[in-house]
Image 1: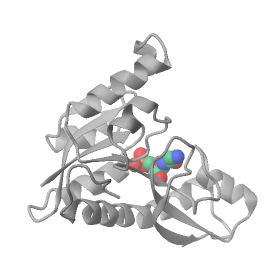
Image 2: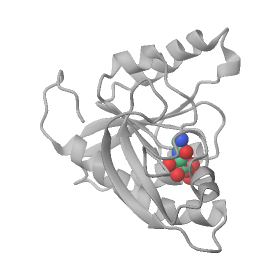
Image 3: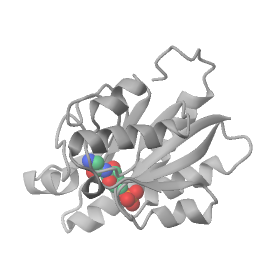
Image 4: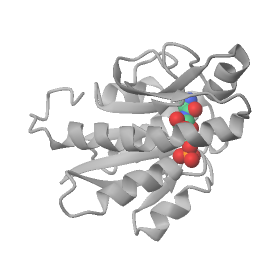
Length: 196
Ligand code: GAR
């Protein structure tokens, strides 16, 4: 099965969905490692599933460049074919991007190119949109600027708060991401070819 590494910063409900699908023997991918940039609550999902974890904190490194290198090393240690950002809230540096060209994907809780960045749900709500959603992209050096791989629309309700809307987005986002990861890892590709 195709080895996948997942990067998280938060509660890890997206990771849990990926782990659940990946637990089936007929699933084309296997999550071989989970890395967080802090002691994220979501690491518990990986530990419960017996998947190795690592924490690479910015504060433990001399500067951002050293952290970028350490994160790239931690990922490389798992030899993944695909890297999935599942609520990972830091930008990736060149060492990681260059080590996995075209093989890092991210899920974002808005319909890109609208509302990129750390507060996609809040920003969409504040703008008064009636429809928002989730987007899975290929990661590049920009903030949520990579090639769009899949999207799903979600209606905004009159009484939505950031929390209720984000929860409804996650219900649509997680199956979408699982589908994309399955599709990308199921294809029979050469090592050199970008996976997405
Ligand atoms: C997900 O909705 C994901 O799209 C978002 O964080 C959530 C993670 O939830 N990511 C971003 O906002 C990235 N800019 P989780 O911790 O419950 O998996």
